[in-house]
Image 1 (cartoon, one colour):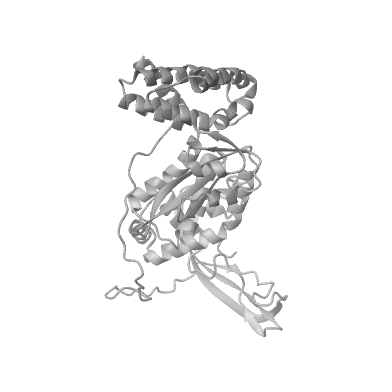
Image 2 (cartoon, rainbow, N blue to C red):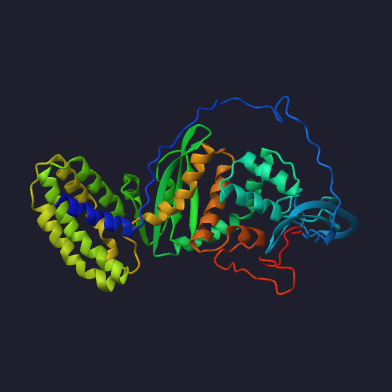
Length: 442
């Protein structure tokens, strides 16, 4: 009987595409409280970047509003110039591009100051395409900082330091804050939200990364503890269904919930292997299998439709009356699961009463898996960079869930992932794969 139960549970787990990370999180000790002096470390080779010659001159739109007093700026006869190193993306790859921005400064009569035109991410030497490439290498390809710097020097002849990479991640994180706000709105408009968390190493300390997703959009958050305050704040006023594992912190969230049945099946199956001679527990698991297998088969055949699933509500109630409520057990293992079924009775089979509600939390695990792999490679994250890293990773995972190119989305400078579409140029030989926003002079 045990082998039959195992095979049934394994079939359910395969159907859910469950992927549980079994690797431990490694932590590296770091000295805290020590302040490092500004500048390069002693003995670090200095590098002075020569100003390259521009290949093209691009008009630089003047600033309209004073950044200090918000007054309208008056046109002036003073000009401003800025040389930008960028990457030009085509169907055949990308190449370095040097351009000069040139435009008129604005004058504020109140502040009596001249202001240069606005520019994307401040007056960085590197353009949006260049910065997008760096973020893509770091997040999508999971390259370490030294690998990115080596690649930049060998492919484009640009020698950069590690600090520039962290600055680029912060700049693009700030630039795409509006995109994350859109993702939050779209997730909260969904009838269900997956939530999960994982520990991550932040400069030697254990932090938590939280994911929120509806299967199409992803948002990530960071906290120093496992308290679910961040979940309560994110889902404040949410009227849909929260899909999560059995972590007790989620129970306090004020909305309808669906607990992950994959987690439950996995735990039942693991204990079945550990205690093969517990006959009472085997009988209990057989009753659970008899309830779950027909339900999952129906999902496999017809999908998550209430029309077909709601008929199992009577079987669930009979299962509780016969197996959970009106039976006395003696095995400690069986008593543990009896208590678990009682505690989560209202949250185990919510999906039977609604259309399209998932019965597992695998989508959240998929959204977090990339971060876990990244940490196994990098070992740790910098605290000052991680919020921006997570923001961009949420956008990257959103692109992935929607089968869109993260790199092309970044290069396009679009802000709405849902509305992003690739527009191939019809001009012969140009082969531009992204909307015609160069991003250099914005």
